[in-house]
Length: 226
Image (cartoon, rainbow, N blue to C red):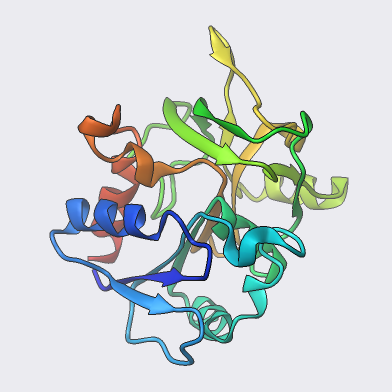
């Protein structure tokens, strides 16, 4: 699997994503600077977490106009898999690759803790390593993770099986950490080749970091993309 991680000024999880990919695949991904204007031949592009451009305008808004994002959008249009994590999810919505928007957390506070996620759709290249309905524990770390879309968009996401993860509630779970509508934690594009999610699977890919519930995502991508 040929993978790359996009690096923006303010990215702080680009190396974490690279380490998780190396653990899963045995090879280091390409690290692509945001001002680059070309991508190599790739199977997977990761848009990582962080605070691109310091979130000074709006989370992900400036990064969405970086030169490399035109190439990411073109690659996604051709079917190349794209995974946007946290700030990467924000960037994908700002760039129009995914619908909706990420708003300020309902608490108005930065949230940084493990959360429980329920796998809503395990029939994708990202989620095939999980069982449908499985609850996994993945960390979050964000200030603007409150997913919002209008009811028509939400109903379409539901009907098309494009909600990949929800924040789990009940049975001791801490529940929705940010107020996201319908407890949405991750969504897919129409072809299910682009995934945006607020929790950080790359931070749950090494037992020494406290858990490995994120690792099946990376191994599933390897299985699907070779």
